[in-house]
Length: 493
Image (cartoon, rainbow, N blue to C red):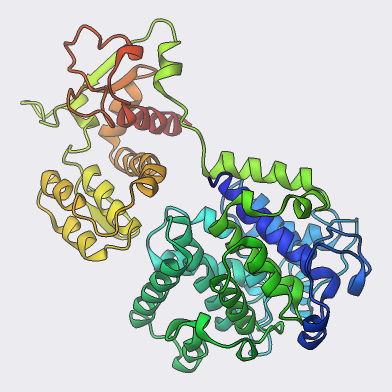
């Protein structure tokens, strides 16, 4: 059973990196005679066993920064602190750094805008941004708009590598990882990525020559190529191809990263890029324990993974247990979405179906229900249904359409539904002063959807039920009520 999803990816990357460090720059022919089979040390960089390189260092810097939110200045400053040997170095010194990254550090130190620090010439297409982009997957986990994903990835890549080729390689990698994060098999995630990226290309005026460089990944099945057709240099396109090829041609985490490392040349980076996704695919428990145990500063990396988990996969602040344990609870029960006769704002505005539109990323949502169903459809790449939901005249039709989403996966929906509903309601209440004032006026009262038929978003009881005042006796989870309470807390701040 897969657990610790962030630990899976981060340690997957670090372990893959550490496997490759001792044999970096070794030729494929040499590694065919003397293949890497286990975690070793020394070799090329004369580093102890379990030592990771700049690939992991910069990934950990990015991960740590994202725990505090998306801030390009903070990300670039953390990169600079690493370069100055202050943070995320395995043995107190930087022993492996690319030319493009070094140049970017010089510009960061001079105070240059982060997105202007990376080289943007055709010669600036090493794998230095691809190797560290993985943490962005967790920051973007609930984002369904590929334009936004591209823009965010582009900005983070551009701190060290600003050329379109590097940016687009990072984009493909992130889109693929997001598909894996949805619970798809590695093969289905690959085909979904191809479809999504090709649709994205069709909507944009990208340089055709640049796009054609990714044909082996996007127009064909990279896994079908023979080993001698896969290259493993430090060139960003080679690294992306080699990593996807290694992953798609393996059945375990160990097989994937060993296949990647034994391709030779830029072994640590190919191992890291492959390892991050392989960790997501096969799970934390799939990473060999004896490899994990020798990783340098393992405890510090684990603490960062725990922090990321708290940030990106937080436990609900409110639940039936902690509400039941509170004394002197006051309740607001709501169910109907009908407006009052005099037009004043009442508790009916708490309903998902309350007629109050709001805007997000230039898209208008007629109700919170429209938002919820549209995001549900987008989560499973059913953009035909998304369009229909946005055009639906009323929330009842939107809900009906939401139940017809193709490729639906209940596990994935369960993991994402609360945050989606919470985010939609935050937009709804923050963009309407009257609604916001009403929600804040409820102070610390317990908000409860009093639906006898809804065992998920409601309490599973009617307001007049004798058990309504006792949370421990509710039949439902009241997720909508608790989501609204979290929105209220956020708005108070």
